[in-house]
Image (cartoon, rainbow, N blue to C red):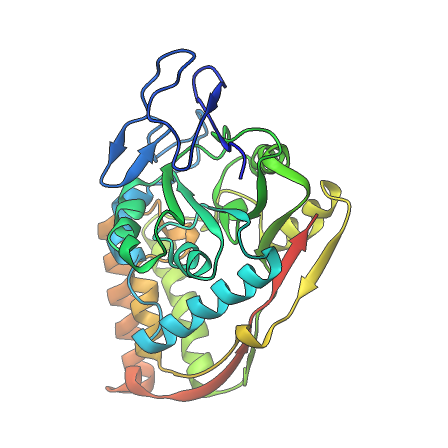
Length: 323
């Protein structure tokens, strides 16, 4: 494996995996905090002067909680790790860019790839660092970095996984150009594809749809007029990314088909944990007031105990690979 990392100050090669902690050309030190290499001092609230509020350090603990029951959560991330590792191939170098607590990065590393988990949130990466002993030795490197200025050499990576990052940054085009710079010829960008759930006309789906609507209404009554992520929408991502790459394909895998029982209670816990991109910049007190109103309205409509209503689902996830 050749050199991968570069000095964020002068651009010189940082030799080794993990890289040298001092640049031999300019003397810059690459500090380490709790197992995380610090390549940028940019605050997580803004990137390069963007007005978009990121703020993931503030919600790291709740964001990292299980979005589904614990066993299903493990199955989902193991499925993603296996599917991505098979796409990339063993021994290849993969950057998992902007996915916080790094459950996907850990699972890819377990399956024979060398993985860099990169995020702007030190708190997110610190959560991942507590699980490093689950990965093969020297298979996973954690980096606090700026997605607008990646600390990697041109043409050094086999794949970049950015499942949702382009929805979360104010200048997604700039991130895509950086991704193209660091990918090897023929390297791949892997993003999240469309997800299908069935059934869709059941009572639990109805409750979840109303919960989203009531949450938005509660915030608007408190002066929050519009809720949206700072980057591209899913539709814009599908429209724009093919302009930057020669080809793309939709990837389906049996490893990304999941069956589970969902309850409104689990959905409300996810909504309450501020897992959605548009929630990260909200004032916590407004968020809590809105959640209280959502629960009150749903209980008035469906009665006490509505959170435990269960429905079995089949969910098909997909990936999109750009080259």
